[in-house]
Length: 328
Image 1 (cartoon, helix red, strand yellow):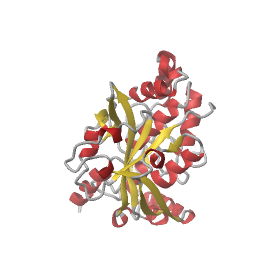
Image 2 (cartoon, helix red, strand yellow; image 1 turned 60 degrees about the vertical axis):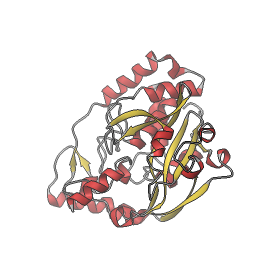
Image 3 (tube, one colour; image 1 turned 90 degrees about the vertical axis):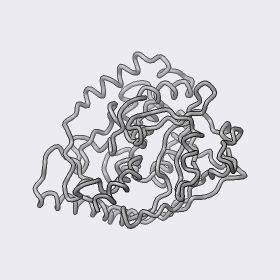
Image 4 (cartoon, rainbow, N blue to C red; image 1 turned 180 degrees about the horizontal axis):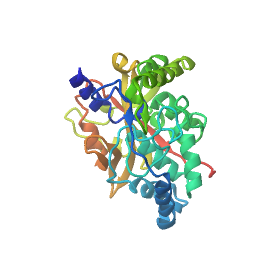
């Protein structure tokens, strides 16, 4: 059983905390996290805004390239963010600058792009990470296709460009997102605390977390995506005129239509990873927090996607364009 969990964790390790399968090892033990300094994170973000000229640029693309590049080489950390030290279930920081998983990296950069100072960054990150801008486990944008995308499109941060850019070749990835079942499948190691708990305390806190699922509902996701067959020739070579349609400064989501994870985490899904498309020296790169290299990296997008040409589950990409919203 431990071997099975290890394999699945590797498959899911690009997800934000909300997607995490039971971690390798015991699932009836909480995760003890080390104390951290929000003040240190604040200092680094403030220093970034005061020392990187392009972070204040009126040109969105210049700002995006600078802000996303600030974290290149930073370590990969699964489940990097939570609701802060006062949280009941997950005391991981609301934001950080030292480590990321794929979703927390994209959310952090998006908040930085939309801001020119620390206070704006905090406000935007809450909007990007939570359905109502208020930090709680229940209101966190747990699922990319039905939470993170929808809420950030509604708030003006993103625009789904998939259909517009590939009007003749896009398909729809359907998935039934069973939130109540997902909450019921959460384990003790989804609880992150500063100190250990007794078995009784752990059981009570886990029951309370799982009970949040009663406030949720099943939802059907209909996500447009560009199939890999529209991006590559039959011999596996990239169709560059297709890749050239993808704008620098967009979010690229890896789509797995109706990915069957119900036995593992209680629900199916249709997005497994996300990162940024960024054009550097006329090469379209994929800037991502990578679980394979354990750090934030750049990799040519065509080479990254070519790895999935024979995949039984990865079928294409969704493209979200970043917008510059009104400063808070």
